[in-house]
Image 1 (cartoon, rainbow, N blue to C red):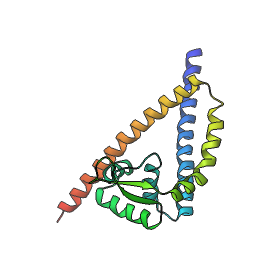
Image 2: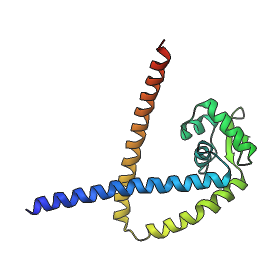
Image 3: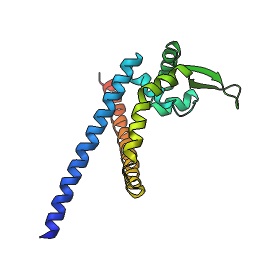
Length: 169
């Protein structure tokens, strides 16, 4: 009897967790949409700009981080540069190479938009023990790996579908 109760309790928590993950993803999408609108960017350009928050990247690394082709990355960087959000600079380690980096103006905009979220997030995180945070990290890491694996699977399906459509008379 206790075992059945534990199983139904676990199922309820798992279902709640699934709903909360979906809701959190939707809320993140809402923030990203609002930020893109505020900055006058599309979601692809926002994805590229987000990849540059941590550090300057080569165009190839930016393409990988943003999930873009190299050609699309050139177009995105051109748009972001025209908007004043990024600049191209020579790679100090490889003078032939180019790095794409955020401008100071872009960093100010990023802080204006996401700074309050980061500060509130820090207060939320402070409510959890180290052990709880470690469990959350394991869950999020596993979720990220799962999502990327399935994104690749779906891209492969889309590529195969595109090839089949091209082969049709």
